[in-house]
Structure formats: C-alpha cells, structure tokens
Amino acid sequence: MPSFSAFNFGCRLNQAELSLWIEELKSKGLFYTQDYSKAEFIIVHTCTLTGKADADVRKFIRKLKRDYPALKIIIAGCMVHTDYEFFKKEGVFLILNNKQKNDLVKRVIDKLSFDNDKDGKDDSLYLSRGFLKIADGCNFRCSYCIIPYIRGDAVSIPEDKIIDNFEKLIDAGYQEIVITGVNITYYKTEKGIKNGFLKLLDKITKIKGNYYLRLTSLDSRFLDDELMEFMVNNNKIGAHFHISIQNGSDTILKQMGRYFPPDKYLEIMEKLKNKKDVLISADYIVGFVGEGEKEFEDGYEFLKKSPLNYLHIFRYSPRKGTPSYGKKHPPEREAKKRYDILKNFHDKRYSDFKKSFLNKKLRGIIIGDNKFLTENYISVSIDKIKEKKGKIKDIKIEKIIDENALGKIID
Image (cartoon, rainbow, N blue to C red; front, side, top):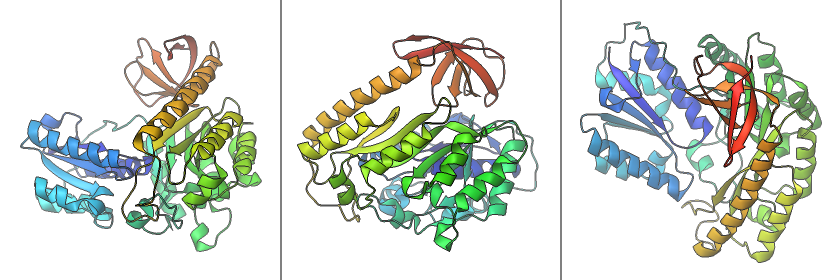
C-alpha cells in the first residue's frame, strides 16, 4: 500500500482542507504515516499570512529535501500565489494553487500513477480533533490582509455537503469538531441569506452523538443577540469563543479598514461570558501602520477592560499587494517592546484563568499519550492515559506548576 505524509502551516481552515485530503487519500487505499522516511510523498499545505510564515515554509521545505531526498513534495495553498518561483527553484514534485487544490487528490493520484481501486484498511487518525470547513474566501478587504486576494470572495459550502462531511467526521470517531472558514459568522450572507450561520449550527447540533463544537474566527459584526444566545446556551457548543478583533484602538481599527467600535466588542464579549466555564480568545496585531504611543495605550486599556483570557499576538507583517503595504509603521524594536508588554499581559490573564479551575471538573478530549485539551482550551498533562486520542473525558486539574496544568481523568 503506498504511504504518504502531510504537514500543515497556518490557520484551522488550512487544517480542515488538509484533513479532507488525507481522509480521501486513505479511502483510495493509501496509508497515512507521520514518519516521513516511510512515505512516498508528503503534502505541505502552506500559509503566507506573515513574513515569518513564509520563512517557516521555506525552512521546512529545505529540511525535507536535505533529510529525505527520495520524498516527493506536493505543495498547496496560499504561499503558492506569493512565492511560486521558490517552490519551482527547489524542484518540488507538484505545485497546486488555491484553485487547483480543489481536486488535489485526483491530481496527486494521476501524477503518481497509483492504482486507486483498492480499499485498504487504515484506522489511523491524522489529528485528535476533526475540522469542518463551512466556507472559503472573504468579501472584506482589511488593509493588512493578503488572504482575500489569494482565496477570493466569500463562498459558502452547501448545507447538505457540510452535514454530510460532519457525519463522516463523527463516524470516523472525532468527538471535538472545529468549525472553520475565513469568516464563519458570514455564512451564506454573501447570498443575501440572514442568520445562515445560526441555522447551520441549529441543524448540526441536532445530530445525535457524543461531541461538541469549537467555534473559531467569529466576526463581531455578525454576532447578533439571537446567535449569541444560542451559542451560550447550547451544550453542544464548546466553552471557547475566538473573536476576530485585531486591535483595541479606535484609530487603528479605522486604519485597518475593519472598523467596529471597541465598546461594542466589549459588549459582545460580556454576553458571551455568560457561557459556563468559557474562555474568550482573540487575535491582536501590534505595531500596525499609524500606531503611536497613544494608539498602543488605547489598545492596551481596551484589553485590560475586556474579559479576554487568551491572546494570539502578532507583530504587523507588511504584505505586498495590500493597501497598508509600504506605509510607515513603528520600527521593529518598538513593535517588539510593545509585543512583550502584551505577551506579559496575556501570560498573566491565561495563568489566572487556569488557576480558577483548580479542583474543578472539566470536559475535553485526549490529544496525546499524556495530553488532554479541555473544552475551554486548557492543555493538561495526565499520567497513564489508556484511551485513544480524540475521546471525550472529564478531568480535574489538581496542580499548576510553572504554568503547566496537571490533572487526572475522573470518569
């Protein structure tokens, strides 16, 4: 049986796409392995959101070529659009842009001339969590973001196909399902349909099974009271909401072309906080165009007032082709200093959040030999886990040592 491997860079949407390709290849009789030395080819799904993302991809490709010279490398995703010549120069086996990757499995099998009539048995799980893609592309043009120019305008996947994919994930044994898309709350809005995301969630959560959903990339502009009430009160929705905020300064949000009043963000987060045990997280860009000391302090004060427990902090990375490219922004040294201030803020907030759950019962899934991820996004070390990864269990956090949570399974 031909063997293959895979590696993902970037967002959960990328992860969802890669997961589907892996499952489809397995259904064709190919065997997935994490051991590159045993694989005939590897799919590398790329990201170009920041300069660091580009650098990480380049480093990984060069390492693969050096350490596994016989391994055929298949490149897909966003970086193909911004640095095609790099992959061509490196002599990778197959390069697929975001349109071509839609039939990646067929292209791979045709290119490698595999016999795809087999139905080999392969029960291996690529990940502990399932990823469900509901939409692609974006109809907004934030001034810093290259993704809409690469992935195109918003396209919602038909509801029946989403439900079918969801049921396949459940049948495969996944019990945490991550809902992904560039902007999931915008689902079907591009078609003039209101409450599309709410209606989709209502249908999914009525499907029987032992699972919960993790919601990512929630755009506050489309979080109305009816949707938030559903998210807060439905026990099939996990206790973790990731909000698309990006900054807390009124001035910087306008510069970013994604203006939403900071006070409105705070109102929304206070409503989401009503969900039991919830963690609220957000992406935050520091060092953006026009960010002076006042703008930074305004954003910092916003964070202090917010109920945010977790931050993904990025230093601004200019992307050629975006409206903000070439405009003056704080020097790297200043951006790093501000990044460190926010990182310290995050570390304290997240540490306090974890400590608040000492000796309390939490739901989550097994993600490794001795690792557990709670529904509200706390990584916990557990001794002697016998069950397979991906299974829902209840745990109790017993200790926190050097910010590491230690606990035990209690059911």
